[in-house]
Length: 496
Image (cartoon, rainbow, N blue to C red; front, top):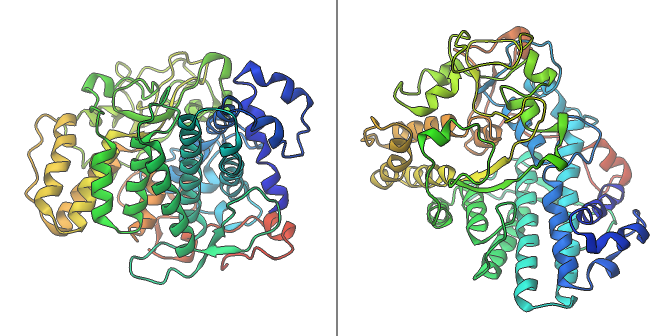
């Protein structure tokens, strides 16, 4: 882990690009050492370190084009699911993931990225947590800084444990290996901890963050606050099948946020000022991330090869389940011929049936668009799903209704119960969160099989991968071979 964790200093170096007060430090501090003396003298500088992590969320810190910070994970999680469809194989970006090949190769970029990117965040969070109390500044600032770092560490480990560990099973031992727990600034190799141990630390960190966030008002939506920490806690609880906690914190998390209007729903999902957005990254013109942008793969109109030749489609089987009066139905063109509502920037942009216009950039020559990480709609869906899985059918129907009737004025509150109600909620979730990076995680946490049958998936493009049984060995990502080699075997591989 030494080489991987040394990359953690990058976030602190990036922080300097956000505040001129750090310029001298950045010009003199070596990039291969942990220069905590310069960063952690004041809370002002410590805030710059936090900002460095925010910047990492949309920065390309590795050499692979599709890995633009967190959006890389979002793209992979959709490509490996059942609801996003490739219309051809003419563009290779994300194709190996769509075919379920690369994550089972220990030398692949997807494994290196999903392992290293989150450890970079964890490494920077550890440096902040270990040093912020010693800085000169107010106690309020110190609490908020530590809360943000704890939230990042909790969230990053949560992202990782779901990939590299086996699915968490409530009431089970969860004793299989996940990822190393590194909770202080160090570079020595650390053995992998169990799924149970990682989840225990995830919960400790997010609970501590929630306590520290009390009374804090964040400057913008790229920062965390108590609502976002509670939203992350709701996600964690849902994955652990702790349904009472998931429902409670999802409801608390969305407090103060309103669902967007139907007009806003068709606005391109590119502006975190949307009243429903809770957490996201703001991308501005002088920080554009070009061809590693989320919008370079998921928008309808950015001028990239991936968009021009291989735009991403919705699974037609899912599309048919969406009511015709639902605003979400208008995000996709089932004919591939609707030039009025789905205009393309130039004649060399290809059209396909079930093409998406959910994500759009304002200027097709720029990949600028804010990236969504958490919306109030997700919190309604978590509450509904948790209540339904706990047997509270009426409560689940109430939570679902608020969201569903906002999207579809003709929606009638569900009278379904049990498995039928859960299925309705999950269909709503799939339609609502399409393209936002949830689908692989949802399939794995619910022990659901991959099922690409009955729609527009094509064996010529997905390499014949239509079915992967629940709990199959392929649901677990392999540890990067570099990590195993650099740790001299301290970190061991997953079953192959």
